[in-house]
Image (tube, rainbow, N blue to C red):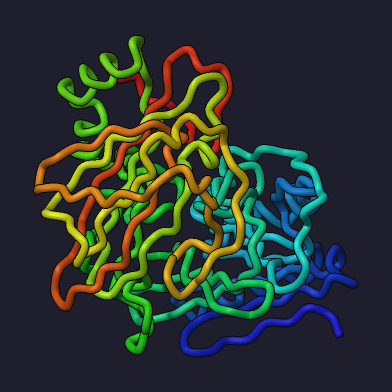
Amino acid sequence: MGSYSFDYAGVHFICIDFSTMKEDIKTWLEDDLKSSLSNNPRYTFLFIHVPPYCELWIDGDKWLRSRLVPLLELYGVDAVFSGHTHEYERGYKEHVHYIITGGGSWLDWEEPIVKDWEHMFIGGAKNLAEFRHGLINEYVRVDVQMDEWIGTMHAFQPNGDYIGVRDRFGSMMKDTNGDGLLTGSERMMPSNYLTGLPSDAEDPLEVYPRMMHPHRVDPLSLHILRHPRIVDQLETLLGEPAVGLQTMIYWKPPQALGQALHQDDFYLQTQPYSCIAAWIALEKTDAENGALMICPGSHLEPVLEMEATDPTLSFTHTAVRPNPQYSTKMVEMEKGDILFFHGRLIHGSLPNRSVNRFRKTFICHYIPKRSTSYNKGYDPKVELR
């Protein structure tokens, strides 16, 4: 059939035929991009089977990096959607979003990580929330409005059961640090998370998703991560200096699901020693609005394997099954309280069953400064003093 393009609702769509890819890019694509400029499209999306950049199984296509990528950057293409590898990856470089959405079928569990591209920061060589290497069945939805477009990655179980939105990207960012993430001061919070989302969204976490790494762009979040009183307590607990690795904000709106039991070091992978969390209550937390649940003493266990869990109770799809010797205890906290806990402590949270109460928390993760190995997807480390 060959490559083709069309305009719809003020958006220019370009579809590159894999079988004629090289010839079409050399002889047709630039003319198409030039002519589309006269129509002043609001956005331009390009679809191509093989990704220019990839980290799992292949490093992308070298020829596309040399011939396609310069055209994308020159003519202001907004996003490139690819497949080929059976996984989810996303990156951002020179104002172009790169999305690999190949998780609609079986996944590339056995494939190795072959490249760690600096600008590919979701999936691949980096973990995606609770899904290692972006290995999750998913599809991507893009909503276009007059003044912005928003992409959302929707995850689902292999049997088709819906998990929820696990990634967001798009044009609404004020991308101050060039990483494509919707975090911190790059986006108003939380109200702008409503923009462009389905008005009939049943999952409140689609409207108020957790925010990852706000300290990278928001001075107040960085100040909290490095707060002297927190750092002093950390060094007392650890008996040695620490470095910061992650911050998160949970809004936990009314009727939001809880989080199944897990260990933080399943994700941070700290060796030797363990990470440590500082869990800060931004308002009163109790049984009604989704308090934290912990298994005291379970920090003595190694990092345990995760098993499938009930998606109607937890927004994460896997959980740790604790040894019966550990009881589960609810932790009620007042606004401003901080709970420090070990990275292998088994913990989770209750659903928010309230009608109108949020359960907002700010969470920091640290590792001992002398830890020699950890999940590099959380880089860069933050010096605390």
